[in-house]
Length: 242
Image 1 (cartoon, rainbow, N blue to C red):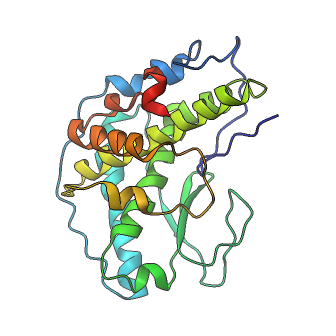
Image 2: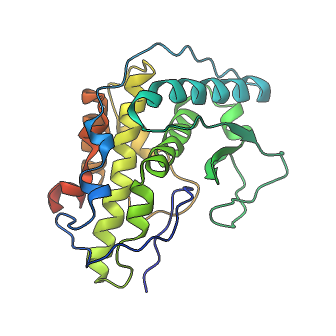
């Protein structure tokens, strides 16, 4: 059995009837025809962020960014629940989603809260690329968790052909990339080149992120559109999720 790896999103183990098929996915309307895709473009509002180079200023930056994302995404998600940030103690390196110890900074969803460990790699960085990317990726898990996408993805057949499973997982993580683009536009961030964003590593080894060209395609598509509906990777051709 191939295990599905969650991007920190707490989802139930609901099993959908029927066989999950790739290219594109069939029989999973929460993935292919989710109400989220009907939402209007997120209103762009300047979110003035200043990371600084202290632990306090970095935490303040993260708290403000999550607040801006709460505001931006609320109109798009039915029955939206605002998400809070909890900061882990400096010596608490354990990830709730993987059980692994992580030496550097990282963020993840633990139940319904974004938990963040702030370490020197984010604090001392001269720019906010790594922290902004990590938080908006984690926010993608908030979106999938509150719209039923994560639950539906988890419920896809877990004994399918490995190639089908791998493609389904790439569809999920490429959608997360697309939501990063939507979020960046919604908070008024100017992005001209997505390559540095795609190069920011996740804190766990994710082999389902897809080809760099496709990651750049979905990041840019989400940003250009500013609409969650641009991020329907579940009906895209296999070539766009390779």
